Amino acid sequence: MMFCKECGKKMRGRSDKRFCSSDCRSAYHNRHRREEMLTLRKLEASLLRNFRLLRKLREEGVSQLPREAFERMGFDFAFYTHAMKGARNEQIFFCYDIPYMLEEETVVFLTAMAVTARLLPIESFMR
Ligand SMILES: [Zn+2]
Image: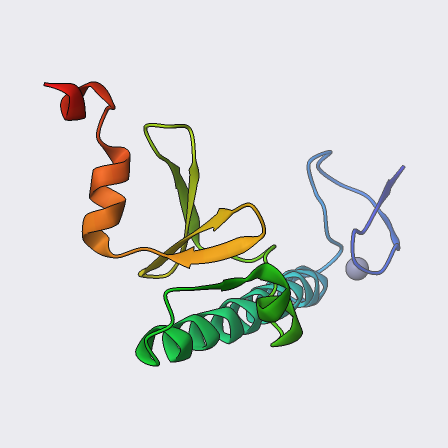
C-alpha cells in the first residue's frame, strides 16, 4: 500500500507515485521551499550581522580585538562565508570580502595583501 507524502491518504496506481493529487504535490513542495527560505534567511541574517560589525570596526581603524569583545558585540564565530588555509596551516576566515584570523584569542583583520602573502608557500620567502 502506498500513501500520499502530503496528506497520508492511501493511493493506487504506479508504484513511483508520491502524491494523491497535484494539490498535495504543490502543498508539499511549497512547504519545503518555505522551510528552505526560512533557513537561508536566518543564516543570511547572522552573516549580515557579522559582516556589518567587521566592516564597522575596520572602518574605525581597528586592526585587532579580543575574541571576547567580538562576542559581546553579538558576533557569532560559527558564521563565515568561506575559509582558506594559509601556508603555515593557519585558518583565514572570510565574511564576504572581509578576511580575518584568530590568533590565540584575538581577532586580527587582514588586508587583501596580507591574505595573499599568507597563501604563498613558505619556501617563496626563503629564496
Ligand atoms: Zn494527498
